[in-house]
Length: 219
Image 1: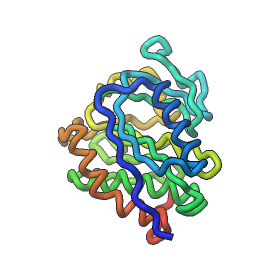
Image 2: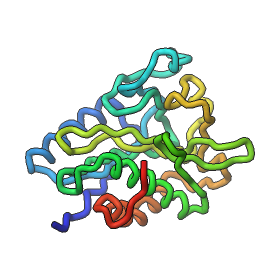
Image 3: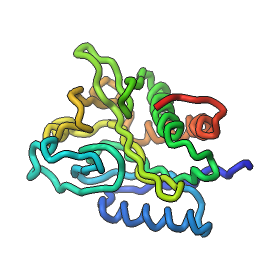
């Protein structure tokens, strides 16, 4: 079965996090009911921390810096804020293949392909989820992935550091990992959110093909 491409929704301004979660849950329910199609929702949040299902309080170093939201996605603590492109990925994995590992791998490969559009070489690290780049100081994380799947419909998604205030990550141990974080701007690629959005759109067909099993990138 050939599925139509997901709806591409862009949200201007800063989106309240609880509102985003409520909207995602409503869309997931509608996809499950067959009353709405798949959606890729591009947002930007005000500064905040989220705690995934594997979060530990010890990784929240400065809990008073920004609001902290417990969330149902996988993973530990993450930061969201201005200058970071968050993509909420609401796809019907029942129709696209019930393979969560392949799904996460497809998201990683999508980010890597989008970064490559701007001359940045992203890569994965075995045993970890997300996308890293090599810097003179060593590997640094440039994108986080945290998803949840409910009755084979996905939500939450990925976050790419385009030009956020990297000091804001200092209030947490990002994703519970010791590696530093970086951004496209810190690497000398100040393309703005519009630049990464265009790259994500250009590389979306390859991501959907990977999800269908036409190619494979392990998580």
